[in-house]
Every structure is written in C-alpha cells, then in structure tokens.
Image 1 (cartoon, rainbow, N blue to C red):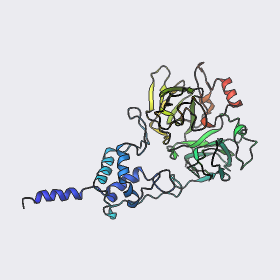
Image 2: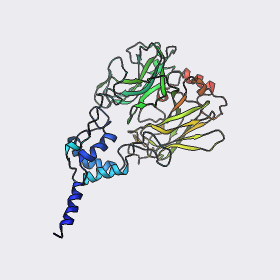
Image 3: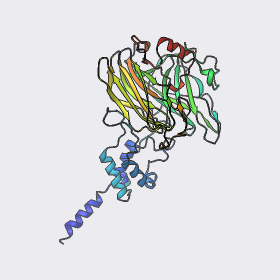
Image 4: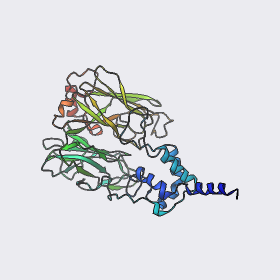
Length: 446
C-alpha cells in the first residue's frame, strides 16, 4: 500500500500527457493549417491525425529550429501584427506530444474543423478576376516577364480591403504582380486583350499604374484594417505581370485574383512604394556585399507594412527611418533572408511620418561559394529579372488621407542631389524607358 501514491502520481502524469486531438490540433489550426492543406503552398496537409502523425518528428525538429512557422524579423526591432512566432507553451506542447509517442487521444476532445473556402484563404471573394487564357509555359529557356490585360468591368470606384493573388501553377510562377491601369493611362494601349505582352510592348509604365497585389514565395493574402483600402477607379483594367521559370517540363498557368471590397469608403488610402537600387555590381566571391537605397516622403503618411525582396544571393535586409532633424530608427531587420519565404511585415502600430522623413534600406548579398543557394560564385552579379541575377527592392505600404492627391506624396519639394525621393510602385515591372527618363528629369529616380 505504501507504493500507491507513487503509482497514482505516475497515472496522473500519463493521463496529462498531450494528445493530438485535445492539445496539438488547436496549435495546428491557429498557426499551420492555412498553408498546410490541399492546394496551398505547404508540401503536406496537417488537418487530421492521419495527416500529422507521419510527420511528428519533422514537426518537432522544425519547431525547435524555429524554421516553422516561418518568421525572420529580428525580435530586437519592432513589433508586428502578423508575427508568426510560435509561443513557448505551444512549442513545449507539440514537443511533449512527439516525445510521448504522438498519441491520438480522444477524437471527442477535438475542436471543430476550420471551415476554409475552397481555393481561397480570404473566404469567398466579392469578385474573382483571372488571366484571359492559360499561358503555355515552355519546358526550357529564359522566359521574359509576360503581361496580360484583364478588364475589371467596374462602373464605379471600388475600394479594396482584402486581396489574394493565386498562381494557377505554383511550380512555374517565380512571382506575380497585379497593377491597376486607370482609364486615362496609355500604358500597353497597343496590346490586344487576351494577348501576352513582353519586352518593348510593355514600355511606358508611369506613376499612375499602382501595385494592387503581388505574389512571391511565402506570400499570404493582404488584408487591410477597417478604414484603410486600395483604390481601383471606375473603368480601370488590371495588368497581370507574370514571371515564369522553366523547370524541364512544359506546363500551363492561369493565375487569378480574389478581391474583397471595403464595406464603406475608407478614411485612408493605401499606396505601395518601392525603394530600388539598380546600379550595383556584386563582385565574384564577395560574402557580404552592401547595397543601399532610400526615398524621402514629401507629405504626411503612415507606414503600414514592409517587405524586402532579393534573389538567391540575398543575405540580410534592414529598413530604417530618419525623421527631419531626428535620429535613425530601425523599423525591421531581417538578419537571415530566405528567398523561399519573402514575408510582408505589418507594423503592430502604424508609424506616422512627417514630410521630409527619409526611409532607408540596407541589403547585403552573399556571392561566395559558402552560400549554398548561389547559382555561380565566379560571376559578377548585377540587377536583373531572373533568379540567377539580383534585385534590391524595399516595398513599403503607406497610408495617406483618402482625399489626398497621391502625387503630393511623390513630388519632391527639396530633393537632395544624392537622394531618391520616390520610387514608383512597380519594382520589377519598372522598365527603363521614357517613363524612367522623365523621372530622372524630375529628380524622382537616382
């Protein structure tokens, strides 16, 4: 009888061990299932015990290594509304479940399943627009950016609250971007509807063609808070910019975009700016090559979100602001950039910035043999569209008064000789043509 307390304690301990249905499934629902389900970016589903059990050891390893859920912001700088970092109690729960043999437990303990809308993470869109036809992706060769005009048919201005851009074939889409072409724009007016356009056919993009949404590896839908939205003017078209990468097998793609409209007119309009540096030349073998870019905001605004973009030699990225007569402040530091997870970081508290505030971006590139993703460490690397070339783009979403003329934000008042006051939304879509030439004449682009 004197051993009974010990036996009771052991039984209590065993009964309290985590089970899948009671303890682990809620963690997966909150943090994993939006990607880990059929048709999404993750390689396997984690909806059921049968889905998760074969991956138990790998799940534990990924959580302890902080590889999943993916999140790359340095915790020492900034706080973000969409922080994916898993809490220590959640990690401990999953690890204890794996170490305990990954038991299923009682299915009656399971929470109700999340009701996903088939094919979308944003619920049922108010409108779905897609490329006019499937694009035939060749099995080999370098593929120029392809552009497709998609009429919206909107007869009134529309304010966009939530947007999701979904490639039809993720294996072939390096990235995708959708621009709003207003009715008075001359951009691509000689391109016929239904035709793919590239090269000189897409020259002439101006400041008025705003970026609505983009898809890069690791993208999630872009959702704005109540009272903020992006504008699509009545009569506008969308232009789908598609970057395909051949992988040895011919394939087809028909990318589409789902849009949820704001329930009422917003008080703030969201604009997407891109801070770009194009003139770099990364020497062969250089393990830590720095590239800088900056812009100066010319009117009142608030910073909403940040997104760094580089290619396979990208190493780290940092966003800073320098207020007029103020000290530099780090907004975001990504010390270990991952091309496969190009996340957007939404500030937990949007940051008001005054006219004359400079936004600075610092990137570093690893062109050495030690970079296992490096296509060729013996080559000098310059700006280019393809993954084996490089880019340095800092994307910044800003909020302005909905009644404000966006050009008041862009138009430099006192631009310095070595300063880039504004980089138009478009980044990778920006083509060095008469648009860029006129921008240089105005001092908008360095």
